[in-house]
Image (cartoon, rainbow, N blue to C red; front, side, top):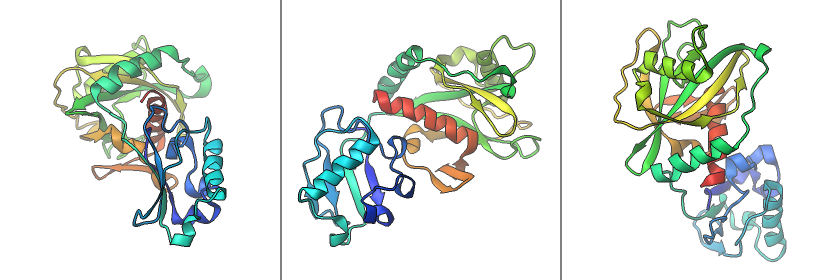
Length: 278
């Protein structure tokens, strides 16, 4: 199974029918493609877990169809959750493995076979970031930075190591590797580049080219205080949860830091690709 799926009580009246109200999207709830691996998902009703319907065996091809499937179960005799004072409707199943073996090779293959969406040259100032993944035990983590409060642009925000492309940079990847070395002392020789995500044009006038990499050797970051006030590691699994907060500050809080904005959007893009291969 891809992920746990839940709908809060505020959306139960329409039985998860309002997409924005309860977040019925493949990205947020992973209804699309559930049970693809053959596991037996179940539908639980009630905050005490007292009512379980085992009839959900395979998913629909799209989120809309998946919601319709749940509604068909209701119309065919599954009691409506509000009759039990339910606080949630939840798909349960095994959590996806986010180990190095599950991520590194399959993600490299997935990125190699997709067509990267490049923004037109005039869209914004060219820049690039590195998404440095690494293994910690049986889980995958990534390095993030909090930018220095003294910077003119995006000061104090959580970001990936990266920055504006210099005239001497031969490519966006060269920019990402150079900036990662300058900001957190990540040696390019320790980086195994897995591939590239789609360009992202920001409202502040930048075009960001994100590159996904695996830090293949032991690494202790050393932040450059002129650019970075903090370096911290974040579990990849945290970004498989639904984002929280009020826009524009809508994202994931990890180790006391809010990951939002362009960084949050890049992580959603990455997680979307990972959901298809896990």
